[in-house]
Image 1 (spheres, rainbow, N blue to C red):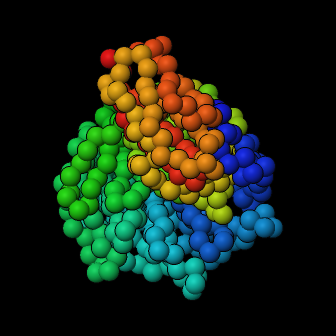
Image 2 (image 1 turned 120 degrees about the vertical axis):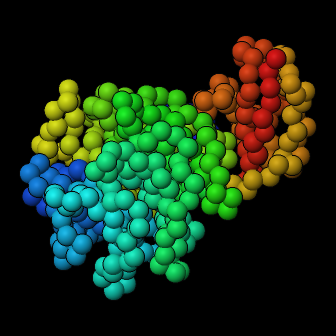
Length: 405
């Protein structure tokens, strides 16, 4: 729980009702535990579709009511039984496809409209059929790439245009071939990485710019590689949750990390209870992340014994940081580079006398913080390197980089 000390200094009233622990929610009917199901939330309800249990591939479809904490079984998913499928939401609809039927790899694409309660089949990808690729719905497009096929791991990259129901191939993912990466869209970009390649499990992270069709390698996750977890974005921040670690078995903790695209930095958050889970499901609903299913994978043995489903409130993170106005004029910091001390020129009002200064290293870890907007800081204890200075005053926030010689 590495980042909450500085957040507790921000906007105290918000924290009076915030949760910092994982809460248990209702299990799926019959205590069902699945892997590689797809979860999403729309119009105040959560949904859970397809996947596999210990014995077979499924076409199940359930709706979750957060007020009653109950699940309702809906009509089966019309695309048929499948595991290893993947999806994402955009503009009030859910998109889902790909996977394995039990006998064949798949490349189809479906959309669910909660207003009608209907699934509609869209144009299939003209790519090779595959299991658990990257899949990001963002800015009226869907981006699909990597994944496992009948011929092994892939690294191609495709774009689906929602307006025209058409696909086009784009520049390949620059990393090695892999399956079951993590992914999400933020701002003008989509992000993907980690995953299981040929003889490796990665912790590398990449950004794709749809406007220029260019790839950029971003900050590596400051932890072991991982595969077969779940991910989501909320309030301009991306999150990766659970999954197998570098040896493709459960990690000792249910690791939970956030990614800030503005800082290109990762921060560790409170792990979910128990060991991490293989291919669980998640969705975001009213500021809560819900974690569902996923067997444990201890010493290479999968266990589908019933596990608790959990939820965790994100509002204390996303609302606090993302609702603050980004104002580069809040402060100047000098000298840059510095050797022992940094000084500040503050552009604040009388009502902004208190706030926050936080110094982060190049891994996104806080190495110093104070709630006073001081005119100078003694930082001679820091090793040489690049640091980010984050300051908050009132409802304004700014981040600037400095170098320590």
